[in-house]
Amino acid sequence: MVCHSCGSMQIVTGEASDDTGGTTGSTKHIAYGLPPRRVAGLLLWPAQPWLDVGRLSSEEPHDFVVTRPTVKHATQVTADTVVGQITQSMGKRRGRIWTTLAVPNPDGPYGRLVSPVHYAHANDGHSQGGSPLRTVTAAARWIAARLAEASAV
Image 1 (cartoon, rainbow, N blue to C red):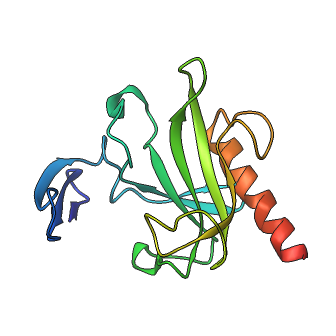
Image 2 (cartoon, rainbow, N blue to C red; image 1 turned 60 degrees about the vertical axis):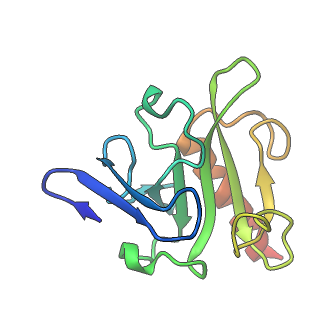
């Protein structure tokens, strides 16, 4: 739940796990409720960080769910409309890099353990896709290039 006027948010989890309960915070630090960003012809929807490491050390939200620009509202961001993900990572020298997943594919090797959405291409910032991705813009461009490759096939 997000209050757009004051920027506060509350996450309520109801699963039978150690995470059951509620968390209150600010959209400044956990980006739920912020509008998407248009980068490289895609929409980047800020999301909760996967890892709680260095959350306050960056101006950027740690994770973005990526859709095509035809998705107009947060309620339309579903497994069927997501085309990728961007996650903040740490490079070899502890510098900030960005990790990406792209091109949803039911036979893709990525996402099996954490998501029903599987991806055919992934980049860890070090190997596949070239040099480490140092900015969110570079990560979004990487996803756009993989989508273009997939649609050309």
